Image (cartoon, rainbow, N blue to C red; front, top):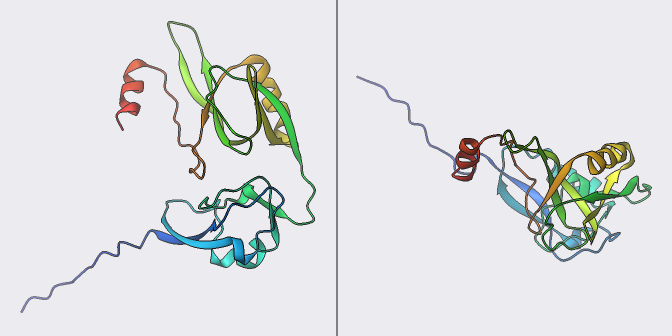
Length: 187
């Protein structure tokens, strides 16, 4: 007699419940249970998202920028009601910036090298935009990061990639050759 082991795959095994905005929430708005909803998503890393275990903490927080209905709420989107903002506004010169609204998130990529050896690498991902101005963006960063952004703005050639509203964190990778560019673009 032979025995067998039956294994069934659970398609929800890598799915979790996370909080999203049920309605548009203005900057400074309370994240009370009536403006939140649970959404089931598939993720590899949920460390930046609020789960049902975080409900008590989340519902005592405020939105740090405008949130759109359906947007997954990340740790950087909320702050304790009594917390003072540590944000600093920094001008970042960027080439060919697409239209961007206040509260949008951008990924800043740095272009290095010359014509014979150019590379593009992520500098900062998911940075909040305060406004779009001629020649670049005004971004909101924590005070501990402000000097890095000022340095980058003064010495690096930056390009802004605008995330769609409610989009996930950027996953850009470094590219330093034509072959790498084709490979990454075809994935």
